[in-house]
Image 1 (cartoon, rainbow, N blue to C red):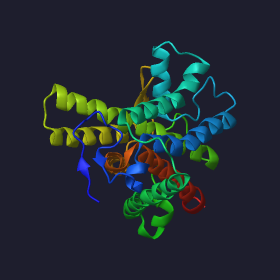
Image 2: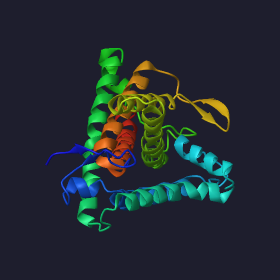
Image 3: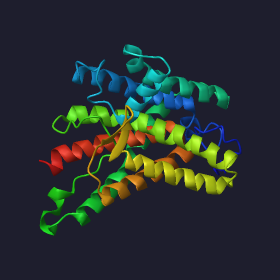
Amino acid sequence: MGASVKNDISQVSQLFNFEPGSYLERSSRPVYALVFLLPFLVFYEIGTILLNTDALRQSQVRVVAFVWLQEALEQLGFTGKLSWALPPLVVVVILLFLQVASRKNWNVRASLVGAMLVESALLAVPLIVLSLAVNTLAAQPAANALEQAGIWICSAVEAATGINVLADIVTGIGAGIYEELVFRLILICVLMLILQDICRFSKQYSVILAVAIAAALFSAHHHVYIRGGYIVEAEPFNWLAFGFRTVAGIYFAVLFAIRGFGITAGTHAFHNIIATLLNAYIFTG
């Protein structure tokens, strides 16, 4: 079952073709991504409301990528409750548009959606192992390495929720969806248009540059980002953490190119969930 690169750059939801009707082909369709991610979207929205009674006016447990979408919608004239409620609809509309543009079958098999859940969880494991390995090697003294190691989480949030595991899981799921939307589905597409169509770089060089730039920006926004026109400092800068998240960004970009948005966002979300649980119940006792 070979894969061939698509010639049309407009098909940004999946850059590879698989045998029609196979699991890999079906599960990479935008409609499968929509059905697969919809429970995650609902869980994130309901969880945010329940965890923060002032959620309609604040962004206490909102991921930064979500807040950016809110600000963009506010600039378009959507304010108040609309700017809070529309970001998940943006995800739905984009996936519906991509499904229509793909002209692929709309039928969805529940069994395949379940398989996507398992695949996403398994694809998160390599990043967990990499983070643990790097942190363990960097921890000093060696005798206390396990307690110091922990696992870096690939999500940036507006406010730390460290003691609340459920809050961390909710924000981790939101990050999996909205960071992949911003840094892979949107940013890589925009960078490809700039590099290939405006700068006239070759497609291969454009892909490499787009992936590298998107990965670096994805990593950097965990340390510093723009919020409401101001530069906000987040997690203190650390070269190991920055390097790991850059590698994670490249990993997600490769997944995005091969498996599409749904599996990539699911993998990101599962990474954050697993890392949160391990950090809460193993590395911090």
